Amino acid sequence: MPLPDTMQAVVCHGAGDYRLEELPVPTPAAGEVVVKVLNAGVCAGDSKCHGGAPLFWGDEHRKGYCEPPCVPGHEFVGEVVALGEGAGDKHELALGDLAVSEQIVPCWQCRFCKSGKYWMCQQHDIYGFKHWLNGAMAEYMKFPADAINHRAPAGMDPKLAVLIEPLACSIHAVQRAEIELGDFVVIAGAGTLGLGMVGAARLKNPGALVVLDMMDSRLEIAKRLGADLVINPGKEDALQKVLDRTDGYGCDVYIEATGHPQGVIQGLHMVRRLGTFVEFSVFSGPTTVDWTLIGDTKELNIHGAHLSPYTYPLAIDYLHRGLIDGSALVTHQLPLAEFPKAFALVHEGKESIKVTLTP
Image (cartoon, rainbow, N blue to C red; front, side):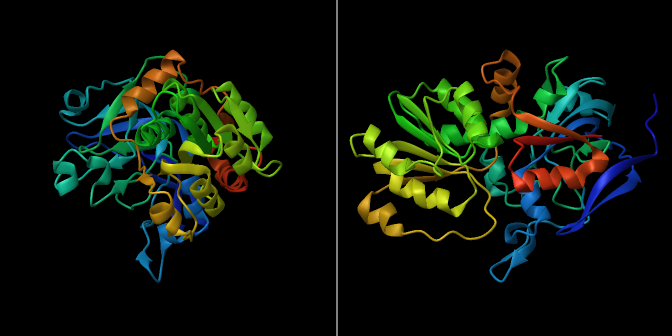
């Protein structure tokens, strides 16, 4: 069946200036794939871009990352509806397949790409933030020839498959934590990413897995995903509770997934000497901390975690087999035209976990 000529898409023109527009349906050149979008997630990063965070729009210290006009959306699943010359063999995809594409499209020419560290590509093109790489908040989208694509199992529920990207990121953060058997692990933040980290960390079999969040409803889901102890820092002294349970030492591993400066400060006090602190969040602005804690006082291992290198196959497998239960994470599914409500839900963060748009 031939594709339509035009489609509905959300177009970012600037911070807070997002519009539903009619765009041409993309057509694939050699090596390219076009999918009909079945589900697109709204990430916290999308919300912060929409809200004007300096990381995306720049300030006196740096150039902004977002280059409009562009179609947002880097969490998605789609059905393959068109293949450019050689694309089927190149990406091992066929018409009708359920497919996802890793959020970064590497340049394959920089020192990072050439050494296998493609997720740190110097050019760093991510779907949905550049005018030459439109994302998934549209009826159709195109995977460029240089994209890294994966086939999802036939019949996989798109409501579940849309979680592949965030779960792949969560798995990478847990890998960066280098959790050992018996470790006392704290994960701060029980949003989509934090909850994915809970599921992945549970598979590492730590001695204790503790989750912190300001919302009791999210903490209940954390328990369902394998948390041994949940703490609401708004109601209890989280630092003291962790110290009490570790003979005053503090946790072995702290993973920061709140995106709030207080989560960083809390973690540096909570982690033990020679412990490991992993930072994954996207922040709205700079965070100031006492670096003496990191160096002279505790000699901490500070690990950043970015994107999801080599973890998409694991995320697909864990979701498909139910090793990580993603069924409770998608709380809102809205039609594409209701994108303002979707962004508001994510920004407020009070009644949602994962919000998705279904074109």
